[in-house]
Image 1 (cartoon, rainbow over the protein chains, first blue to last red):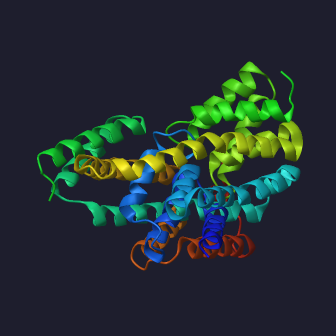
Image 2 (image 1 turned 90 degrees about the horizontal axis):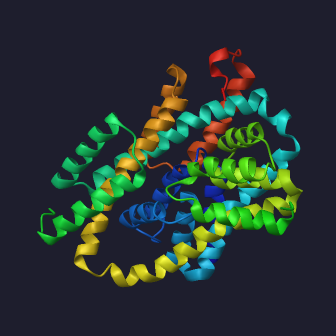
Length: 176
Length: 187
């Protein structure tokens, strides 16, 4: 039953992703390996689209994955599921706010989860890098990395330039 | 403006529509709507909610909305805030997904998305860099970073399993290691 699978997978994502919208990406990437719901290329498209549509990236990607897999009903289930753990946990925490924040165990768990989430995202970066890159991509990526050293720009800057380069490359058949 | 659940919903709906380019934009938006225009909560509270939102699971923007909504009107407030912030994202993606099927058939669109993939890779790189700066601060945290990286990238271990193991490690560390100042999570 596809709906139950969507609910299960996205509850898991809502419950275990720490550190912001991009923290959901490792989970979604893992789904491209274990399920045939969407490919890693489609996931990358979803991430790009979610930065030009309103809303948190995590919600966008959950909705997209749901609608792609099982239509609008699927989207309702996946979006609700990714939010539900947050809703329950944050409401409970609001009730015992101070106690939670300065608890020694909580502090220790957070100090472990932060670098781990970072490592998980880096792993996705490397996997996408290996999956999708050719010579032109490598050059473009190199230029972008060089640009990020100088100053931080809006996400749309990189997406617009890369979209344009991709389109021109497709037009002249430059892709390997 | 009254702090009833309809107004809370409307406010978060507006913020949800303006939330472009990633969830972290929510902080300045809420600051302008909640703190400056309406004085429903004060600035320190908002920053507290933001910091706290990063230390619980889930999407940060969603967590901030829930904390703020709860503060304003308990559970009904939390629910109207989260529905408001999510709805614009949901509607726009559902519509976009319907159109996608038609436009992706053109070859130049396909190569455009290939190009965008490089842009996304750059965004992931930037996110990693930022998270690294905030979280990898000593030898212990670098070991954790590389352990998670290797298990995920080369052994394809499920991220959920890695997170569960990390939580257990965190609990064991608090139980058996002497407390060190540098391990404190500063805000």
